[in-house]
Amino acid sequence: GAVVSQHPSWVICKSGTSVKIECRSLDFQATTMFWYRQFPKQSLMLMATSNEGSKATYEQGVEKDKFLINHASLTLSTLTVTSAHPEDSSFYICSALHQGLGQPQHFGDGTRLSIL
Amino acid sequence: RKEVEQDPGPFNVPEGATVAFNCTYSNSASQSFFWYRQDCRKEPKLLMSVYSSGNEDGRFTAQLNRASQYISLLIRDSKLSDSATYLCVVNTNAGKSTFGDGTTLTVKP
Image (tube, rainbow over all chains, first blue to last red; front, top):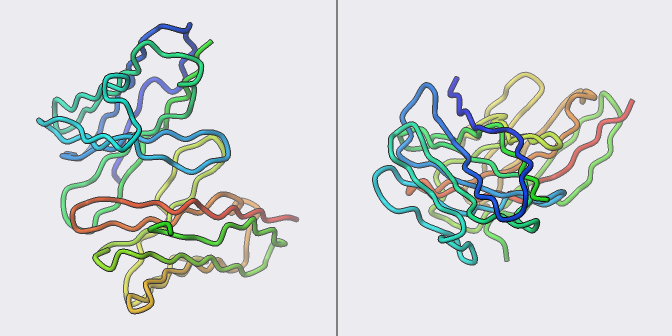
């Protein structure tokens, strides 16, 4: 089945550090990838849609200068949390959409980000 | 009103019970439908797609009613390992996915 790899799975950093998270589709090409954030006991919140070769589309209330997204190839999207602060601590999950109508999203393992 | 609404739960059932989750969606342009399960502190995993004719995968049965814009998931003979949060996901043709908030199921011995 489709596999999406996300790295790193756990990050603990000092406040002010920038953190880069990678999302790779391992056995299929993904023109579209999604980045979500999930706080404890809350539902997934879509942050942005990442399209290969073009600028990401951010959801309302998500700062694009804070959360930099790059989708340079059909198998890789990256999310960089710039100058992270404790309130950015969360579970970040990427997903990739298999090409073709009616296909489900496949999720990465998620990255647990803790900012001290 | 949310685009995708699910029973909030939680559902607490004994092992062996049959439990059903419901999900309604508001966008009539929705084209594809899925159920995911999410375990605590893990990513969502695809459980099954939902087809108009209804589909079954072992103990799990999913149904779609386009006229009522309603999706259901039935779990028979519940196992302890079925304890998780179940997410209803609706896609439009443009590839936009909308997630329900999830329904939490706890299966007890």
